[in-house]
Image (cartoon, rainbow, N blue to C red; front, side, top):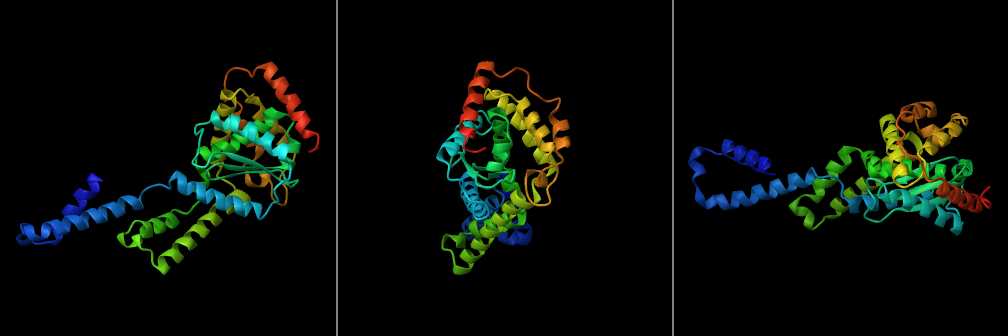
Length: 291
């Protein structure tokens, strides 16, 4: 802020002759103008807030639910939330503005989606493919990592956010005109499209996926789950190949590359055998109606 003020003052005196520099009558007016410009400039460079991320995430989730139906299975939904929230507490971002919420999509497609702010979807097809609760926790840990890293928000074109803040950050925006509102609505809708296309069609970058896998290993170990479960899940996934349609293998890097990336990065220590046994029994009980 100080650097911006200094630059603004320098520009002011460069543009005004020295004879006017001592005109005290206009100093106050110019200071007020400069403060207004500096405030707008600072706002135009700020990141998306947690609250803004939450509302964007809700809108993205609504788009996902327009593509995949929500599973009507209260027990399975409760179970997924139990696992997800256990892992999220041990993540780098235990709490979000609106909290973490996990839901199941009624589709045989093998996939999972992390909407900005904390809403995570996992398909029935993916749940059916997991061998135990450890693997299911590994999938959720990977999606939680995307939220921690704000990968969904990163999918928004920077020009959109700059344009939005150009409207929000101006003095005139205290009373939005109809054109201002229309512009903000368009930017909001386009931002949702950016995120939705990344989740469903294009996928995250190779480096983002590798980082999410690496973070997932830490979350699993810290929450008492077996980090090796991520590798066992990926090995099973590698046998699925790349489908012609959608699915996790269509939007992620080659599974073999993901396995190679984390092979030597498994945290030391083991999950408590008794806890694993209890979780496996719980998994099998909940899975009966699914399989």
